[in-house]
Amino acid sequence: SPSSSSSPSSSFSSSSSSSSSCSSASSLSSARTEKILALLGEAATLLRQGELVAFPTETVYGLGANALSATAVRGIFTAKGRPSDNPLIVHVHSAQALAPLLSDDVNSLLSPTVDQAKSPSDMASLRYAHLLQNAFWPGPLTLLFPRSSAVPDVVTASLPSVAVRVPSHPVARLLLRLADCPVAAPSANISGRPSPTQASHVLQDLNGRIAAVVDGGSTEVGLESTVVDLGRDPPLVLRPGGITLEQLRAVVPDIQLYRKRLDEGALVLAPPTPGLKYRHYSPSGHVMLLLPSLAKNRSDTEKKSMETRTLDVVRVQLDEGHRVGILQTTPELSLSSELLQAQKENRLVVLTLGDPSNPRKIAQNVF
Image (cartoon, rainbow, N blue to C red; front, side, top):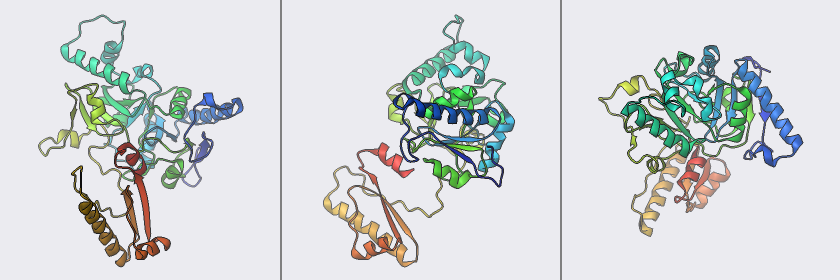
């Protein structure tokens, strides 16, 4: 049932365990499938009723509300403590569900049955939209379109464009189909904090603030979606994310990456997408980034020097009374007996993110 400020949020599990990846319904027993459908049906009903429901996507867990209800969407900003000028991304189950969100002009351009004169800029935007949708939807790519009047101002921070994506996570897509409405969903965490990759992370931040959490296990990417502005020729990547610039350029070679400039204040003052204005992915601890040489063929001496420098920093922090965590890639650091003792006493935590040759896995493990 919907939670109040003093009651806990419901948790609906759609995976075989809270830490497992979600399986598609076709691979499950009939009874298991019926149970999942019933649980997702409850979550979908809550969304239609204007409640807040957290759910898994392939990137991170999202905090969802009916995108066509201004009252429901305002609840997102209250629960997260999110600034009202930070727009939201709207999730739909397929490209065919875009129509209620887009302006009449855009819908007519996207319609394959309409034969009308189109300007060169319209044709370019249309071509880019089709190329990117066909290549990366469903998936972690958000596209900016001119919005319809049905989209409340609170979703877009009163801006003329709406950010939309089709998630690839099977639980998210099924929930969106059952809810039968577009769902605005930023990451399901207190604003500014690291984004959640498990249902338990959501509850740490939002338990008692939202109606329910759909537990679909750990997310796959861990990094939020890439955002592309189609209103420019060539298109502009406003926020890097789960689809890399290299992947995008394989489809649209001249796509550009936005780089903040001091003389370009409009995008920062009135950002059309999250990630341009406010602090993001901010952990509660102090973070130090130790950079090795960028040379591909570093000598053993250089590698050893980097290890020595890292461990010296760790010792200083421990001597100052701090609890220290090391995020490392392989090969792993060689810890002295002194540091092994600190690890045993839980004053030192060491986490290995993976092999540097697999940056996608490292990104997933970081978040």
